[in-house]
Image (tube, rainbow, N blue to C red; front, side):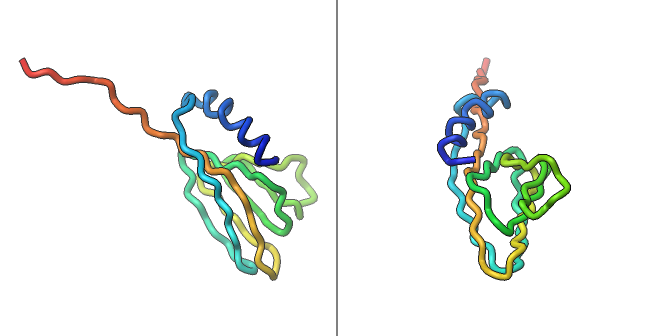
Length: 114
């Protein structure tokens, strides 16, 4: 998925999830050392992969993205929950995401003293 497509997709996806335009975007460029594995807690967030990184394995509640796997019929560009990202190479690799963070809606209730 390209950055342009992701930026077009995100508003519709967030609306589907009931957040409308009530979210923050962050561009995340991760650099993983050789054979490094990291985990990101993306509970209640979306991480949209905006490239097809070589030698990188991404596994989350939403599915997997790993170009080295031959026995799958689908790769996921949208990830949520605990995201495990592993560099399968013996050299540093880069992974780029757009992180979508829903904002909490402010309460509109009022209190009165009578």
